[in-house]
Length: 75
View 1 (tube, rainbow, N blue to C red):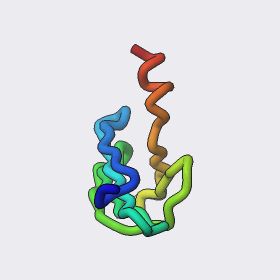
View 2 (view 1 turned 135 degrees about the vertical axis):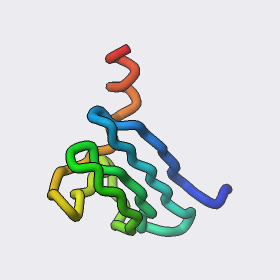
View 3 (view 1 turned 120 degrees about the vertical axis):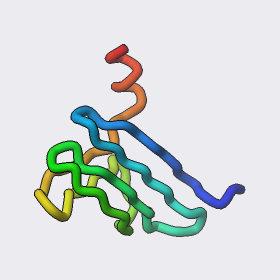
């Protein structure tokens, strides 16, 4: 198996982005995001669970990783 069991890099509506990496054998996600509401960028760690979401530590906006199925249906 590879180094990571889950990897995603998404652009969010409103100009934000989120990248989530979950190493193999770990239950902690490495998260890098730019908040679509205030533009704040941060790298942090958070316990991994699906569906994944994180709050911006500056403005409190809830950032969710959108489902790929929902993104495909929009197009």
